[in-house]
Length: 497
Image 1 (cartoon, helix red, strand yellow):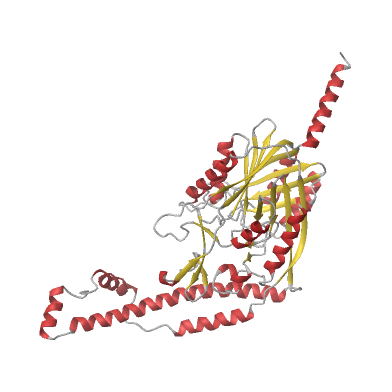
Image 2 (image 1 turned 90 degrees about the vertical axis):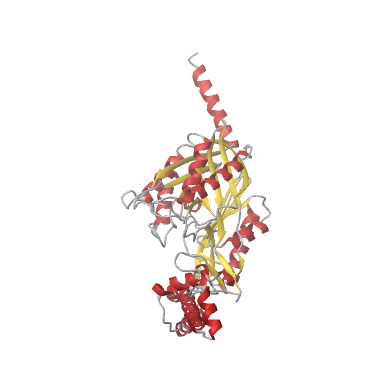
């Protein structure tokens, strides 16, 4: 009997090793990164890590409830290099196999590097054999494209930084991507270990209290995790959300609340997860390459926009009314357009006696009202022009000062079973993601922006011909040619998965 126990242990160890070789291994963890001292907190923010291993290949997917990975917000430009280096020291995972995605919300703690490392170490220390499944859900109620085409051919966007043009000028809205890409990982015992979901929408709705929040992503992940059971972790990968806003983003009649939108996204993701039957699949491929994208020269655009600003200023008209007098006049002339200045009988009396005092007064007031409205529209356009001019000048200065006429970016292509993912370190607009999905030969191809760095917006070549009229084409360092270069590289990488 003394020799039987070691023999049984050896057989068990061999069986486990064989199982590990034929199965994908995965581990998950999450760590709170909420900045509780920065002000009121509505709900917690997290860094979450999913470590996946097959044979000699290991991948770490890290999702952070932060605005970006570097450049703006609370995460510094050295974050990725430092965290990847520490992860390699502690776990052996090579830096080029670490994928870090920002959900694009705000307010993390200052020691987010240490907490990110903690999450990856915990996930790597708890690898277990998993079954995997891939699918897709649909959600089209919670978002809208924030770019609109006007009758003059220009495109504007919806921001809280400035006003929208008058309704009668709108002709078309841009597309959305309603697909939710889903990867489900279950333990061999049948419990869901992790759910990775990819969707495109700016999580910038906020909550009525104004407190710090993970926005709709925090609420959707909470719905998923509470329904999947104890220990399950939902990880959100932000998609091509550059020009995608939450629905009712400009609503001025109700408090902004991300929770209902997040609940809808969570429930739609759950519906997709429950339609998946996980199975054994050990395929894991990770490709990491760097490409050069051309920098823009927007000097001519800036000059044109400055000229437009001058024209707008010169178009302002003098008017004898101000806001205090405009509002009651607008109400009167809207409520009773035929007899705004007096009762109807007074107009009839003047008509009978040949007097036109009331009608003359009305004509004067209507002219003043229209001038005031015209001035308001000019003011609204001026705010858009000024905001976008500041962005263009900022990026033109950085591009001129750059040592090279291109920016080098990192692109990853990942395959986990049938789940295929490519990345971009900025804010690609939704058409980029739609193009990549349509061109891919893989049934389940998804795109994650906001990954492994941040180079601002990445609008399509067509959108960049509109430069100066919307944030996505103004808050950018890229020339229009970037799109063809990136999409060609992605096509090549997808062919190698």
